[in-house]
Image (cartoon, rainbow, N blue to C red):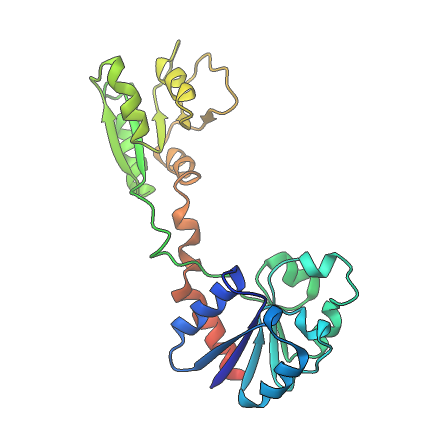
Length: 257
C-alpha cells in the first residue's frame, strides 16, 4: 500500500509517530504531508496517488474543508477539540473518515471510537538498571531476606551498605533508586533521615516514630515490598507500549480499510 501521513509540522510528536509507523511497516510505502506547509489545493492534487490517507493531525480535514476519499484519522489530544474553534469540528471530521482512532482510552470512550495508544521506542528510552538500597546488618531482624526476595519479584538489583562510614553514605544513596527498610521495629532511624535529606524514596515495613508523609509504609512480606518497589521501577508498566507491540494494531487497521 501507498499511504500518506498528514501531520502538523516538522520536528514534532506527530511527525515522530508517522516515522515510527513507517519504520515498523516496511512492506508499505509511506510519505508525509506537513499541514502547516501545505494547503487544501496541494492535498487534493496529490490525494489520488495514495491507497490510504492517515490524518495523524485530524484538524486539517475541517480546516481545509476537504472530503477525503479514503482516510482514517487519529485523535491525539483534546486540544483542538475542546478550544471550540469553528475551524476544528471533530464530529464533522469523523463523518468524513472511514475510521477514527483515539490514542487515549478516555478520548475513545467520549468519542465512541477505537483505541490505539501511542508507542514508545524502548531502545531509545533505556534506563540504567534499577537498584534497591538496603542499609544495615543483613539479618532476620532487619528483614534482609524479605528485601532480597522482593528485588527478585520486582526484577530490581540490590545494593547493600552494612559497614559504610557516614562520609561514604551520600555516595551510596546516589547509586540507588529507592531504599527499603524492612526491620520489625525502629526507634530513631538514621536511614530514614538520611534518605529524606538526599531526596531518596524510602519504603518501610517497620513500626516507629516516622514523621514524614513521603515515607511509604507497607506490610512486612516480600510481595508487599515488591509491589511498592514497582511504583518506582516503572519501566515494566510500558513494556506493552513498545512500537514493536503497537505496530500490529496499525498494520491490521491499514490492511482492513
